[in-house]
Amino acid sequence: MKCGVENMSNQYEMYPDVNDCKDDECKKSVKHFIDISVPVDISPKARVGKIDMECCGDPEVICMECGKKNVCRLVLVQKVSIKIPVTYSFMSKVGEDTVECCKDK
Image 1 (tube, rainbow, N blue to C red):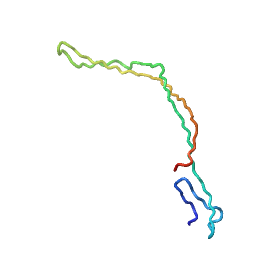
Image 2 (cartoon, rainbow, N blue to C red):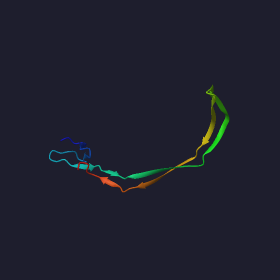
Image 3 (cartoon, rainbow, N blue to C red):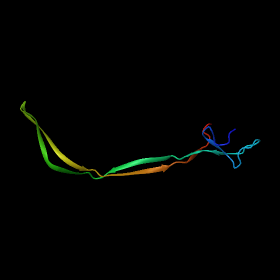
Image 4 (cartoon, helix red, strand yellow):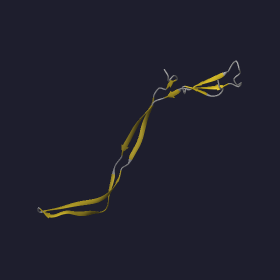
C-alpha cells in the first residue's frame, strides 16, 4: 500500500499522519466532502415610466404610385426620437438550506 493521497469514490481523500506508514501499521486521517445548498428565488420586476417622443427634422414624402386607377399613393416617413425610462428591480426569497453527505445512497 502506497502512503499518500488516495481518492475513494471522489468523496473521500486519505492523508498520511505525521509518521509515514510502518511495516505493521499505517495511520491515516479521512476527509469527507459534503455539499451544502440553499435555494434562492429571484423575481424580476420592470416598471416603464412616462414615454417621451420628439420629431426629428422634417418628414420625407415618397411617391409609390402615381395615376394608376386614378390613385396617387404616398408614403410619409418621419424620424422620431423616443425616450423610454425603465426601472429594474427584483425580489429575492431564500429557502431552507440542505446538506448532502452521501451521494452514493
